[in-house]
Length: 349
Ligand code: NAD
Ligand code: DAU
Image (tube, rainbow, N blue to C red):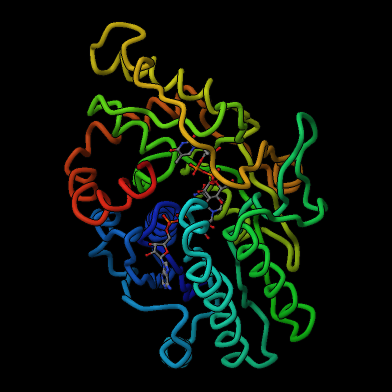
């Protein structure tokens, strides 16, 4: 069956992998990608599919209510896959209001336009909201986040994402709007903006710059290769049950410092450096305020119900990721000039 899908934030990191997968796999679907092209959005992420006949890019702001309502009336999207967001925790600490605007108001504007368009004619319609494991707060040394873990967000970013999740559920309960939500762990891979740990450190290693490790480096994250997240999103979009939540994770916990050491080793090998050379760049810096100690996902629901599991080991995924950044030096070069330099100086002064 044909579909008319609006993907939001498709020029960003995860969004571009989702757009690519859906456009390439479902030729009969019409895929519309709306993105404001903020500092994090980059049409270079999509050059390989930009001329496909089933793909249209629209530059626009999800918080612009008038524009979004008109867009829904014009194209009559039957489904939305909503990824557009402000996504970086450190930026949410310095500018929390920007996160409330995009992540909460933006989600509500989309929900409202979807509701207004379809009223109660909900057959074959779906609003798929992409969220994060950070809504659950932090874990201690043990335990895993399940779909029923209580929300307990700690950063302005995670609070804004938690709020948007609540609004999606509220529109489901109140107006019968069909929805699914997925909460995923830390993604890594090609096309990720170098404000996040892995691409920032890869870029610094290449340039022999200090590697700024927050606090004691003993914080733990559960890492998932971005292509595996996109595959999970495709599966949930087509097979997920209405009003359900799915946790997505890599079964792959790493303390930051151990991950960084592995990254340094792989980089030494790929750059032809002596073993241990890149590790010398590690520099402990001031901690992130409110830094969550540990995230880890119990992904058994999506695994049992939808048959999903990660396709690569972390070592393989990390190696592919490093290769992507080494093969795409121009992509990185164009990003790390200008505004990025200012951000970097302010964040790591
Ligand atoms: P990203 O920052 O790389 O991309 C966000 C995209 O949204 C950018 O292209 C940006 O231009 C666009 N955007 C921002 N504000 C907009 C607006 N007002 N209107 C239209 N477009 C706008 O983010 P990402 O890492 O790809 O994350 C995508 C989604 O996945 C987010 O909702 C994030 O919360 C969620 N998520 C991310 C991770 C992760 O590890 N990166 C993990 C779990 C969930
Ligand atoms: O868990 C999912 C979340 O993962 C997503 O919802 C977010 O959008 C995404 O940004 C990510 O959040 P984190 O804060 O975990 O990712 P980040 O890459 O910023 O940091 C990962 C860990 O590395 C964290 O413990 C902080 C640490 N870190 C990060 C940077 C940028 C450092 O030690 N030094 C750094 O310079």
